[in-house]
Picture 1: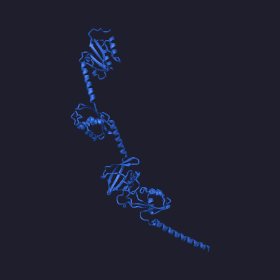
Picture 2: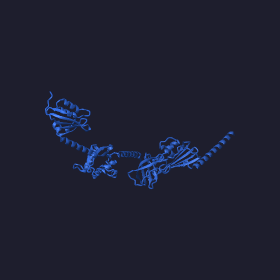
Picture 3: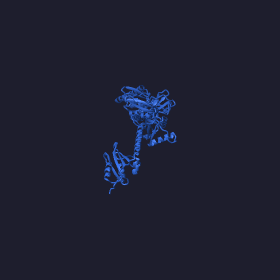
Picture 4: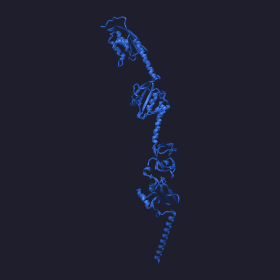
Length: 496
């Protein structure tokens, strides 16, 4: 009797459990709409409890196996899907009793959809995928384009962005844009036909007061245009540094009286100072157009600044010789202008293949030189008019000039000597003809004195000529004039 009661009670409990199981299954099917048996095709389904996968259908297992994933955690699934679905939650769980989230992929041409149903500690992840071959258009979602280090995006014929890679998406986030199904427009591209030449585009980062520079190239597609942006920050920074250096050099060279023209390796004028325009009379507008070095010399020729070649060589060959000499650092000529001015033109090589042409106005220097030479010629003529031998020495004892009578009397021409001719050389010459008398010793000491020379007069005895009167006269600038004159007394007693 007791055993029969136990058996009956067990049957009742089993029946109740069966009814509860059927009711739970019915509630689950109604509450969550989809069951494992109802899914077919390319829909992958995963069931997670407390962040651990407890069940997956065949498509889900194939997806994990195809990626070589053996982990069954929620974070492992997120790592698998994060590149295509950046908004996939990092952790399982919801603050509500039940929550449904639908995620769209980053690629606008990817028609896959993820549905996440979460209730209490259970989550159901459904991934409905469409094959790439079924998408209208070319297969652009490749590893190369998606993982390229620089932004790439595609616009349709209306200008709307239909696809972008990860670099574009991450750059938009760094600029402060929020995640959205449609990527935002970041680059202000001019309305021009696509071509091989890039556009330089700057994008401002307002929060950090920065500007990011890119060189953007457009390529036509069948139903739109693909854009490739390459980082140009280094190039722009180098150009700005170069521009700053050029401005600094221009401000420095602006104070120089020397006219300066610098030509780059392509032989175009890249830098000039105001003195160049003043010396050459070339307008600044002409020089600012960066003329070639040949055009620059042609303009100088038309302005009657550059002289014609002395030989019968054509002008173009003459200019080529100037350029060649400047490249080798050996060009230096004096240009005599019809206006009476004189320029010294110098060519020097510069780093990176550039050359510099310098113009110096030496008119005053040449005028002073001519005047000095004229004064010297007059002094020579005046001394040559004297019958007495005369020689002029500087304060340091260097020979300055002598007259014709001196050269004839002493049979020497110091002006034609290759080596410096000094008062010591002259004293040696005189000693060879003068008798060694006390007068000679006094004269020699007065002439070779290292201090200020004093006036000295006396008579010296020459071995072959007789007596001569000698006068040592200091003149302006510390110079000394030595004058020999035939003595009125011709007889001389030779020393023993």
